[in-house]
Image 1 (cartoon, rainbow, N blue to C red):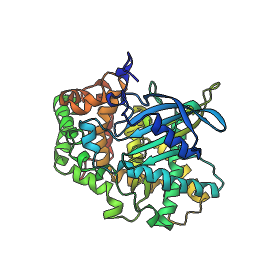
Image 2 (image 1 turned 135 degrees about the horizontal axis):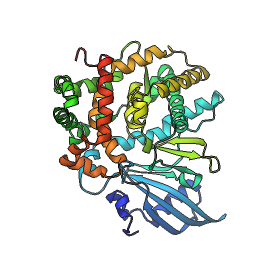
Image 3 (image 1 turned 90 degrees about the vertical axis):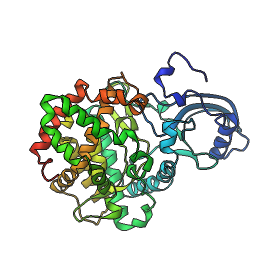
Length: 422
């Protein structure tokens, strides 16, 4: 594979595959998967699997293998996912993380069990893409069936429709419901899922995280309409990372009564979903969630509040995602009942009290992640530049679309009492 005129559309470390990703390696993978030792790969095409801005915490390639077995000639499209090998920020941030160990466990242990529980209740929902190969040594690699030939695509050039979003929240609600049953009945089964975003020391000290609030404060200082809110964020500047840690690690360090804990996705945003729509009518038929690298047991708010800023559009965000989260709750309750959950059921008031009680998570996402998402949607700024260039990052806080969001959300936070007792 060589660079071409479209190379700027892809992540730089996905333009050229590593030398180990070759015909011999794919032959070994397919021979084992199909239990066909005689299998011979006759051709292998490799290309980047994702576009700029789709993801950051891995390197992904799309491969199409032509091969022969005793049963004849075959072709299989695969996605190869591995850890960054090029020296630089991405490798430094992820090299000591547990993201691959976590994702392998999700595909080999948690999600198969969740699907089994759903099937026993009469629900045949598919929660994950088949993983045909995984390894941690000599290198961290996972290989999946490619969903694109099956009609699934990543939405990049438009917002998701309400129908598509409901499909995504349906999948999440069913997964969360089954995880609640497992946590209640066999908590040790999920004890290995303890490495989330806040367990990555390199992430917590990375400028992508640590410079968010300072950039936000500088913006508040320069936008007259918003300057009145600066004292509130000045007040939390010294402790909001600690408050965030308390939220993220609550289940393991200080579980609370009347709180809802689930095995969360951890990165529930649009580019971590693949949608399948009817070719003739355009109607949404299915969605498949992907990328479970930071899935861990934590408050239900981690996925739900994250979705408000990272998945929804500003129209839904204006109301903190109320309609979609209420819809999610209806599916959650229905599924809990279907799978025979014996614990205490969440209530609408209880769920929203839990969400509002974790207001520091809103503050973090508003000040650190939302500017990046808004900038990426403009297609004018690369994610790598946002992460690595402080000047470019600061400019995102003055984008018109981001300022519109802030001018909508801060008065709402004030009305809801988010700035009380900081």
